[in-house]
Amino acid sequence: KVPLALVGVVPVKASAENGSINPGDLLTSAFTPGHAMKATDLEVGTIIGKALESLDEGTDIIKVLVMLQ
Image 1 (spheres, rainbow, N blue to C red):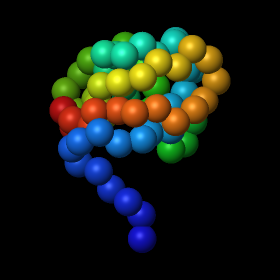
Image 2: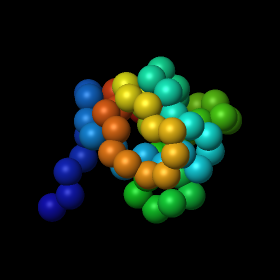
Image 3: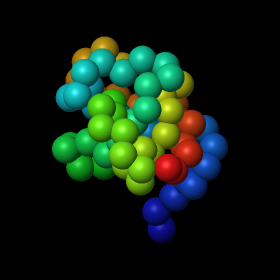
């Protein structure tokens, strides 16, 4: 079974491939499979959630407020 979150604060694999992530940044799916990245295109349906922690470079797990839009 795979855990699935539809709303709430959850740990998410994140990548800084689209720029560093700061708290409050909106996140979308990254080119790295299974990761999120900073969203620059804010189209409806592309946002996964809002970053609650920062990530300057590389990949790591950060807390995200999941709110599908």
